[in-house]
Length: 334
Image (cartoon, rainbow, N blue to C red; front, side, top):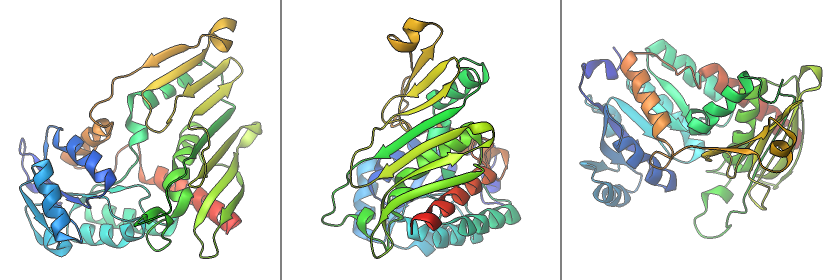
């Protein structure tokens, strides 16, 4: 029996938050605001940090012992937000302990690791998902509604870039090859996921990039090509800015996700008439729930309650396809 199955109808799922970094400080309050779940413990390698986090966010318990969290039969689900390189081993341990897992992106470091985890989750009847919050946002849903309705005609091209110069000083995990996946796994995963959601898995990939001697990728640009001339041009960088918008174009106009595109609440519709296309696009705006993670978290809570092992909005197949593209880009730039 999966851990969540023992909670009973109407009983909130009991979640453990693993990791106390920047992303946890945004996601955990959103999770606490969701009906049907409660965060009952936070864990960090540094027990003092876990205790301070628990006090700040009103979480009943804290610990520095991950194994103790996994051994607790009262814990139903894990939200894992630790350094990228730890995701595979820590997620695997949680699944073996009978816990449902929502793991921060990137789920793993490559497609083989991700496939291993999804196979184990399916075998154990446990829910597993990469926390790709972008795909659950109302503006992302609206983008795909506009595409399905033919607002811009058949989508033919896509552009998405995510470049921000992150500080390379102090305890910066982004520049530590032992803890970070570099620019592609941290930032480029968003343009790739967007392209896959519109066009599917590419037929070919062409990539170039800047990689340190130790293998850490600092920047890359890549073109994903599809049948009938469709394409996506993407870039990611941790050393310089690249415009933080994304757009999908077709014969009748284009749609723009305003910056930062992976977290935006606004969609510009450049279609319907020459003035709207070139001068005054329609702006569709959505309110933000919490820090923006609520729609995804609500969906995950619902999926666990239903007893499924994956969510249809971001399936195992979706995640594995994105990782295959990531693996190909790495093969070309390293």
